[in-house]
Length: 316
Image 1 (cartoon, one colour):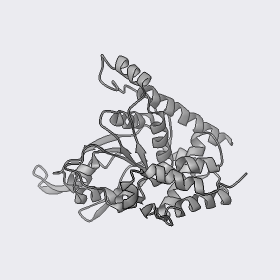
Image 2 (tube, one colour):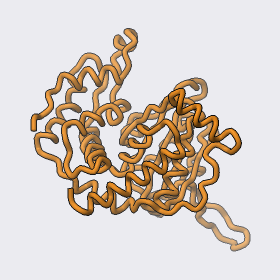
Image 3 (cartoon, rainbow, N blue to C red):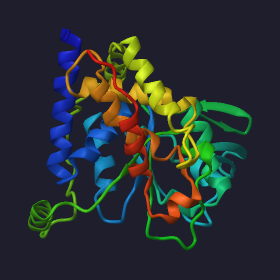
Image 4 (cartoon, rainbow, N blue to C red):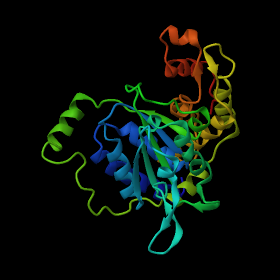
């Protein structure tokens, strides 16, 4: 491990500890969000309301010295409410461009599946190209830029399924669950007399994201480890358990996230265990279960874990 990797790893640990100090009992979620950020991707979070998703994004934004904005997706939300629009300014007697909330560093798209497909699609360009086209003009967003979208598994009425093209833009999907009893007791006692999360205050920047992402891209991946990652993704296409397997973009995402996990752990190279650890979050939203599997009550994670065991990992 070189000095640059050590420095970035120390900064990441400081940021990780800071977030975990505020978002209690969700350390795995915090790690996966940091991995997605290092890999330069976006995150889809599924979980019940009230588990601190907004607090997570606010704290992360403060820790990287970035801006944070939140959009509450509703059935009547229009694409222009997301990206911005052209409006006539009476005081200047001319049309002006009003930038939407996507012009930020961290964007929380809350309950994204409550908005219709046309509004959801407004995020596609900015998630892929890191720019927004308004009135025929391409306008780049600030860097770093990251979308953290949430969807509620309980609320089924009034929701619109995310199209496959948009799901594929999220580098990982995180399932967030209730904290353990001890952690929930700590949350209850700490925040009983203050708002959940409290005031962010003047938090100094703990991590240079651009530098960290460059260091992440430099993490070494052995050819055999890369082949292992590709074989894992390809195994989702040749099984009767899945109606739709993961595409080539999943192989890219898996290696990028494995690199990020190695950096988070302070290691300068990717191991097969790094790849295995990222299979579920990277693939769970990119595959579709076969109907008979759903009838049997098997979940996506169970099927993927089963496939994972059938692919031999390279030996060191």
